[in-house]
Amino acid sequence: MTRHYNPSHRRQAIQWAQNLLARNFYVLDTETTGLGERDEIIQIGIVDAGGNTVLDQLIKPSIPIPPGAARVHGITDGDVINSPIFSSLYIKLSSLLAGETVIAYNMDFDWRMLQQTVARYRLPDIRIGKRDCAMKQYAKFKGKRSGQGRGYVWHKLTSALAQESIAVGDAHNALGDALMTLELVRKMASSS
Image (cartoon, rainbow, N blue to C red; front, side, top):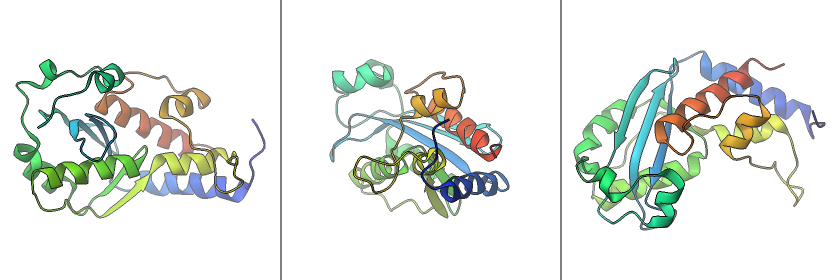
């Protein structure tokens, strides 16, 4: 193991994971039509703190799925042709997440995509209790300084899993990524 830049930050990340596992929370992941400002969610996966599937849903977007995005997650227009549109899932999703703690691996991206998709259908914002980013916490846990000397290096989910000897399964599938994120949080919590 390489030396941690600031061991107290590692302890803080471990404590974050332990505190998280001591209460109810959801892990969310999305797959999308792309990364831009006009893109939207085409798959959402949510698991609870016990690893139980709460939501695993393909979503038919209002725009075509570009081939480049399909190469990443394997979801094509044909896969979602009979899936519900986002607005038909909104009440279920909004009720599920209302007031809850929600984490994601790269929460900034997943939250932005959720907000963009909500806005596309002119729906009210989804209100959650607290959101947090497992990727940023894992960066603190690993403690590798960024090249600019400020903050820590962010790791792709599959890289983080490999570094922690956690099996990678069903990567770039929203439910698979949510489950792997939960396993990473559990691993962090059990570290010393």
